Length: 114
Image 1 (cartoon, rainbow, N blue to C red):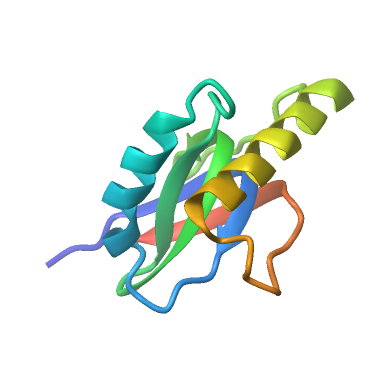
Image 2: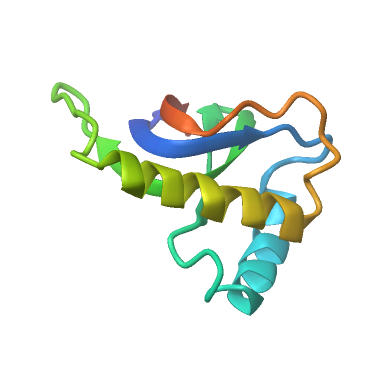
């Protein structure tokens, strides 16, 4: 049995969850569809160590292939401010606003093994 290695470079934030992140993805998809007009760029990413995936809400997200490299898009300060606003609205709409240790949105790099 082989492992698949990927790396994702994204703008967003990690959502700590007690349950496995995959348990949240259908709910997130359904809930975000109802507020697409408020946060059109927000989606989710589940990635991490083989059986310990993490959940992220992201706007910009690119996979960086093994043996290559990536870099941040040339997003302007206005674009990042809009992404921050969209992510904050998504956090509130999805019911994650009560989580005390949420980091502010930013560029994140997530290695993934599956």
